[in-house]
Structure formats: structure tokens, C-alpha cells
Length: 432
Image: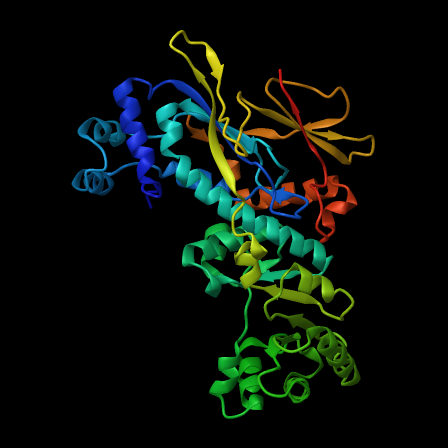
């Protein structure tokens, strides 16, 4: 599917005006970054890079797109002629997907002509803002869950395509599996699911529903036991499946109190290996509250796919450097109050202590070294229009998940706390 019209009208009118002025082909550098984290958050997680690169490969204007632009007089004939052969030929360097970021981290540096960088702006921001918000929320949930697996199951609470993106972002941040089959098909993700309350209500009795599910899916299935009375549901589930029952799911009520006595009941009935999965509008705080309960896994939906109260990462995309008519590079920056940016191409590294723990995010306007232990954060994603395929598809998800695990382990322990606070490490800006 072509992605070129996932953009704003004014990107193309800017292109038209720049073509008319002769400035459209000026070599330029754009930067994507967030000025701040959501209030109280300790870090953000880069999400969406792989999806962005996949979409960039399909960012072309075919006959249908050009006809739409022409029929609706969006741009003139000269601009349509330019767009006929559009393909991104520039270079993109940035934080690897799954990496942690902080205020003013230079998440992406786009080096190309003004025309090419301008046209991809809205698509770039829409992908990165959404997926980074979901990955950031998912990472907090994983921290709350400790070593218990989390299942992404929010598809019905969001747009069908954002559901796929959310599932992908959740897996990168540490979720074990997803309920979304399209996400599984596209990215090789583990998919899970058994039944909803409607399946129980379809049958004349709860026992009949359980017998049908066990007969079809096996004794190791997970039975939903709270359609009617939970205690009766648990006892019936054990009677139907026996000690081989894989699990029971609780989706309502006081989950902390309920999980405790359900565990005791299962043990009393001899089902010591039957696991307990809880769902019901969980977020990172609800998961943390269940830490002492005998819960084996969490199913998370609405809070995850909406970023747990912060549905965007608030990234912006700014021109930070361009060549003048003489071919000299000129740093440029917005100076408006509360929205000022720092001009110049950026470099970034993570300063580490002698134990390999992060102590600062160092951003500079020239290549720089702290002189001590450090890790370069910028990696090539696109070089002269050639996309690094290791960041896309199923292998890209696996690579991003590994990067996230390593980045979290590098952080001080405070990063995993849910209490509101400042970013877990400061951002240090070094101007040349």
C-alpha cells in the first residue's frame, strides 16, 4: 500500500513554494525529537522505526495519488511533475528501535534535500508518535509485572491498523504475546486467545460451554470462570478438565482478593499447576497492585493501546541545518517562546559509569566524546535511499526487543519506579 497521502496538505504546498523559489533542492538536515517526556515519566521508548522504514519504501505517488492531487488542485503542474518520480534518496540516522530516550534526544536525523525531508514529515511523525507512546506505556507495565508475562489484547479499543502497530510496539517493550492475528502474520508475533463470555452464554449451561471448549482446544486451555459465580465456575472447570486444566481467567471484581482465594481453591482441588490470568482494564498501576497476588499473567487492552493516558510521544520535526547558496552549512533553529530548538546536526551518546550504568544522555552539535565509558546511540537506518532491512519485518521486531531489554538493564533502578519524577538520567547538551 502506498503511504504518500498519509500526509498533511501543507507539506505539499510548502514543496510547491520551495520549488518555485529554487530552495527545494537545498541540502538540509531535519531532526525528530521530544522536548519533554509525559508528566512524571522517567523515560520514553523509541517505537515505530521499523514501520516507518517499511512505509518509506512504499512512499511513492502513483496515478491514483497524482490524480487526486490534480483533481483537487492541491498543487500545480510543476509540483505534480516532481512527485511523479518521488522516492526518498537521503540518509536517516537515529536511535535504534527499542532504545530508551529522554528530553531532546535526537531520535532521527534526516539528511536530504528540503523537498524530500519535507514530504515525509507527517508520515514520520504519525508513526513514531503513536508507536513510541505505546512502547513507553508497555515498558512501564512490564516493569510492574516483574517476571510475569503480559498479553496485548487491545485491538477492539482502537483503529484496526493502530491495533497492529500497538501489538508490535508492545512486543518490542517486553510483552509476551498478542491477541491480534494480523500483527502475528505481519511480524511473526506469538498470538493467543481462547474464549469470551459470549461463548459461555451461548450454551445452555456453563458446564456445557467448558466441555465444548476442552473437547476442542484441549485440557490445557484457559477457561473464563466469572460469567456467573466465580467459585462455581472454578469448581466446574476443574471437574471438566481435571488437574491438567491449563488456566482460569478472571475478568471482573476485586482481582487482588479474588485471585488469592481462587488460588487456594485450585490448590485444595488438586490443581496446583493450573495458572491464573487476570484481565479487566489493567494498567501499570493495577498490575503493580497485583504484585503480591498469586497471578501468573496479565491481559492488557485499553490502557495499553491508548498509551496509558499519554497517547502521543509529542515528537516534533524541525529543520536544524541547511546549506546556503555558497554551499556552507548553516545551523538554523526556531526561537519561539517555550518551543525553541537547538540548531545543527546532532550526535548522541549515553555516558556510563564504571559499572556500565547510564548516568547521562549527552547530545552534541559535533562529534564528541566524554572521555570515559560511553555508548554511541545513533545508528544508520537509511543510507542514500537504501533501507537497512535488519530493522524491518519480524527480524526488526526481534532486534528492537533485544535492544529494549539491554537499554532497560543499563538504567539505574529508579527507572522502573511508577512514582512521578524527573527523567531517570539528565540530558546534557554540548554545543560546539
